[in-house]
Length: 147
Image 1 (cartoon, one colour):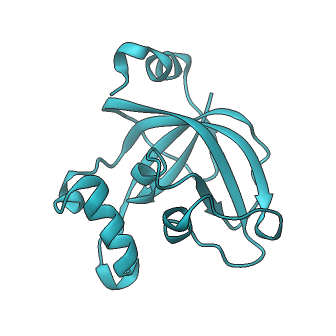
Image 2 (image 1 turned 120 degrees about the vertical axis):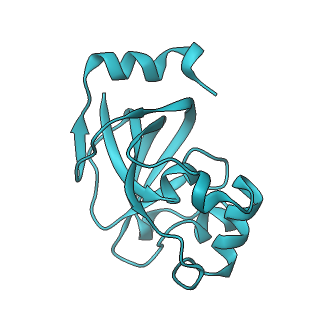
């Protein structure tokens, strides 16, 4: 299994119904289960996030989300099914659009199923896709570990 590091709050959002796509500047040639690693970078500035995204975060995680969402670990996994250019796809909903960067020449990674872990697995992330050890993958895919 491979993992992808995302800044918070987007890592946690990708494990919700509100964010079906992760938008990226380059394509990802991968399909199947992908571990979601919440990096240590956490964007909390309402001016940077925008009022609509702050409203989504408050509704999904409560008003204390900036202190509650985990960082520095694997928080779940998504079943990634496609990676398409922005010109060839569209957001799944208005929330999905607000949760991503849908500028031209970017790519949308679409996921289907989601696994949310009860507790994060402390793990050091990396840029781009990176492999995780079998022990971590088995914990992620173990139904007893899911929230």
